[in-house]
Length: 492
Image (cartoon, rainbow, N blue to C red; front, side, top):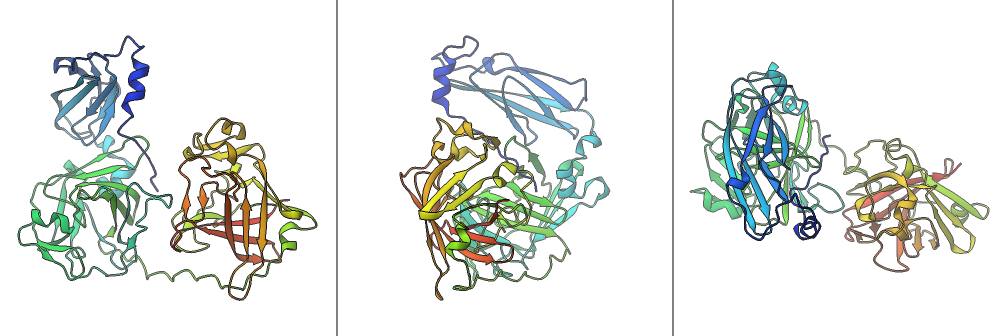
């Protein structure tokens, strides 16, 4: 899965204060002029189709549009042009007085097939071995092929957590019989609508003859124009962005033509796109190659049986004190729509080797309600904790919003299960948690622990007496729709 994340915008004011001390930056009160935004360019020694751009002056913020779907920032930048053609490159510079823009054309004489041989392009188009292109269709037979979630995404990840369409639920809306063909040559795109398309109600005015669909939203008569194209931007730190030229789109039209590629494989393409009438919404569609059988709808994950978890306080604390840790195996750490599921992350993968610093943490339960978190000197840090992502020394938490999530002694309470309810573990204390600091009952923290002496309750949904494996879960939605689950085993 391709997972890259990026930010187009930086917060302006803090950097103005810093840059005021740097003579090289242009931060005058008067706005820049077009002349200030001029730039030069030349091909690199590496390849005639890889171009180095240099701005004539330095500015606090310098944004480039390379005319090929890609963007960048900075004074000296590089862009790659696999295809012959003329590209209009635009530089926009900013100071505290305003901005200015300058554009000029870059002519690429020859196509370089080697620059087109990229895994992302090949999976989308079929590559040079598929001159007829690769045709995708909506994966209508499987649940979740179409849906909507929040924008920006919640802690559950980039998924349609608010609504997921069932198999063929939108039959007759105009989306399931459409075809989308991507060609590597000339970045050509062909959209076959079979006479109509499925659109967001807010966009009905753009399509003459549109009408309310029996499956919700609107259906509109539409034939896509010839001469459509696609482009790809791969901004650092974010998903690749696939853009379709004016007149074309993919699947459900919500006002935009740019799609984030959440996942692309040989036989699956998952896209995310923001509703242009309500940027608090993000829509999702999943496609498969035409003619590909994605298989029968998988059986739903069984709900855990209430009152069927035989674990006692003695099992939890042993002879007086017992240390637990995450089981180093697939399914031991993840989030999904049901208790015990890791469908949304990491989707069945074993992440114990890439997050060893997480899987060596100790969660210690003792007599008298004693609970201790011992990270063994290191943690898996994330931005909400006030540190960089990745394994690092636990000392990095000192002085951050997440300092209370470091090693510490807290309290716990164990509630025995009944025929109507599962057993629970409640940990109490500022920064008290099991396995994942940010998850609490009904939500996820976006920064350090906001509440002193907070209690968090975990439901025990499974206990295997022979192996002593204990599975706990926590509902972060508050409505039974999003669960983090963890499998703990006694520490050796």
